[in-house]
Every structure is written in structure tokens, then in C-alpha cells.
Image 1: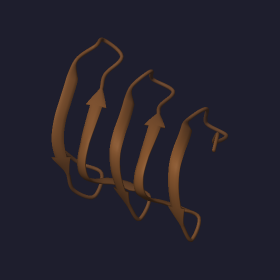
Image 2 (image 1 turned 120 degrees about the horizontal axis):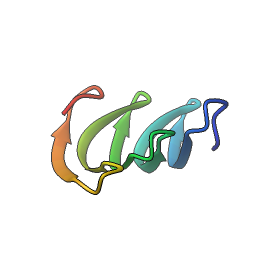
Image 3 (image 1 turned 90 degrees about the vertical axis):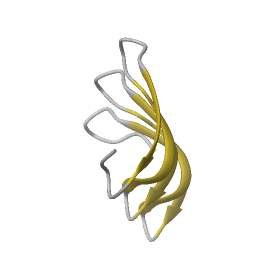
Image 4 (image 1 turned 30 degrees about the horizontal axis):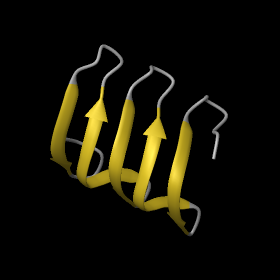
Length: 64
């Protein structure tokens, strides 16, 4: 799914929201690969910043 703002998501959906495992590529160049719940990063994921920094962490309702 490519969004109007340029973000790209590949993964599972539930009722038109990101749910389960997926990959989100942001306009900034950052990328998140991991679990989603109710359209937000939620659960274990790997967040790769545009500058190459990698964060492996648990996320809760979109926040690390």
C-alpha cells in the first residue's frame, strides 16, 4: 500500500488498518520492520534510521 504522503507499507491488514507483521518505509527514509496493532508500531520491531542507526526494541502504541 502506498499512501498519499509517500509512505509505503507491505504487510498484514485488519479492517483497513496495519495489523500483525509488516514493513513500513517512511518518507524520511526511515524503515520499521516488525509488529503492528491498530495501525501503530506495537510489539517487537527493528527500526532503521536513514543514517544507518538500527534500533531493535519493543514498541508500544507507536512509541519505543
